[in-house]
Length: 342
Image (cartoon, rainbow, N blue to C red):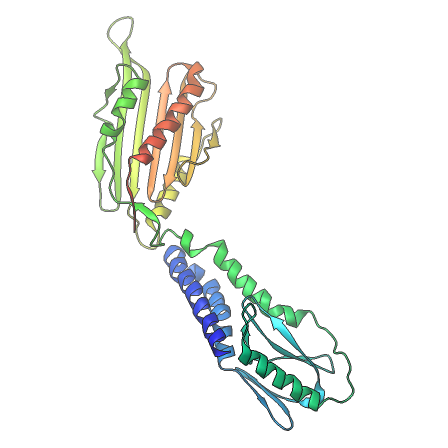
């Protein structure tokens, strides 16, 4: 019994410990109440079983299940049944007046044979038969037998809603540490998409700050106006990649997600479409539908990286081509960034 209970305590401590550490790092004190609940259910209940004892006396059965201790006269017990949880099973005394008394011992893993458990259970049932009088079937209640499994299921549901392994602070998640130069990375593709394009040095920069690394580059494809004095932009590509290091209680991936949400906030008349299987989340935005321009944007978030591709043509008929090109550029950008396990 003690081996089974200690195993349950160890499993509960691992699950609830990971949930507490990752959850509190990611959400702060707001997650404290569910963390306390998960720890009490997954660790506290098995610990109570460890402190429990079942003693057979001449007068009846002493059931100790901390913090409670109860003496049940043998004549009041009509039946000994087994109750099964997620991992363990243990005996329950069904009283002749319809009540139930759960015993902390003996207990075992229900999926594994345990000769010691079988021996103790046989001794308990023999003790009950010795004190039996008129056999009446106890009244079956529903709420009490379901309380334990419901509490455990609720605790596990809280863990699975925000699992530790999905946390931004989970040590096995991949995070980027450095960014490549955006102009060098995208220059061949930019010149293929926009013949004659040149890099706009005023809008292209590399900023590796202590909290955010931001690499931006813009290419313009232009021609002279009819009077020969004015440059007319006939195509433009803008690439911005940001790497978040995280500040305070917000993780670096959490900051990247916030940036993604800001970048995908659309104005009236614009529309966006989700792009599957691209980063952790990705959206395609038609920036100026109904105008004489083709202007699309693709925003992508993966781990602590947020990437934004803007592609514009002075030709409305190239919308599908531009959307496909912008998505391919976004995939290229993510593929060129090295993500390490933290």
